Image (cartoon, rainbow, N blue to C red; front, side):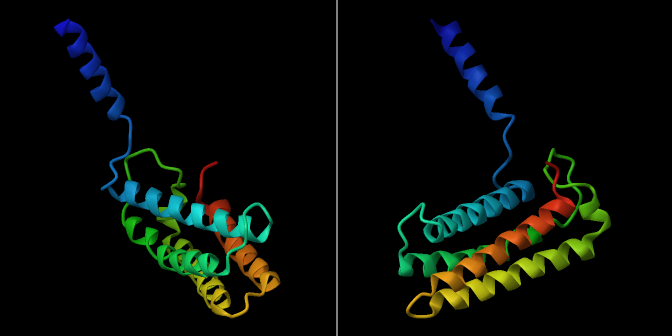
Length: 146
């Protein structure tokens, strides 16, 4: 019985080795990007009829997206030895990468401000969320491995 317990424990330990350390720069980047994706998907879903539109919730998510959009860039300080979805170009074209990051941040500011307007104008918000999505996509096209 003990040998089965030891074998099971060893498998659990080995299974955990393949993950990304959540406290590493890569782990923190991934967490921020995942949160950004979830927020923008929820807001897009509200505007595209997949989710019920809630003006207050939309504004809260827009504010959070604006805050989170400033987080991942600090974790791109040095090239990483770990497997990542970022192209090596990110390290050679750091200025361009950071320029695209600032463009995304600018779109989230505008989205946040538009979401504060009462009553909500879903047409305007739709344009704003499209701008955020396009800013994300332009950086992905330049610096992400698909």
